[in-house]
Length: 61
Image (cartoon, helix red, strand yellow):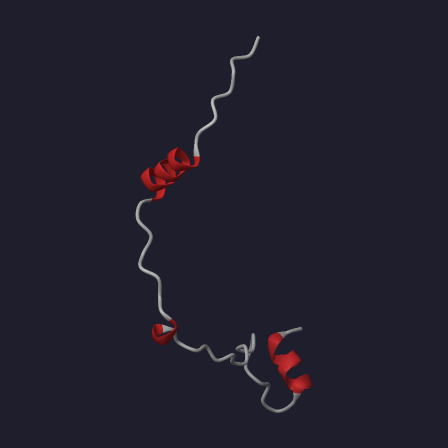
């Protein structure tokens, strides 16, 4: 036999969330937000000097 499952009220769930996570930081107003600018990603390796074939010869690949 299983025991009956106790259900919490919304207020009890709110209290448990507050105990577990604490206070939320104050909300950021639209005036305080910063606009982000997308930039190009950094290449994995520098541009080859002397041509792509010379780069492969130097790297051994």
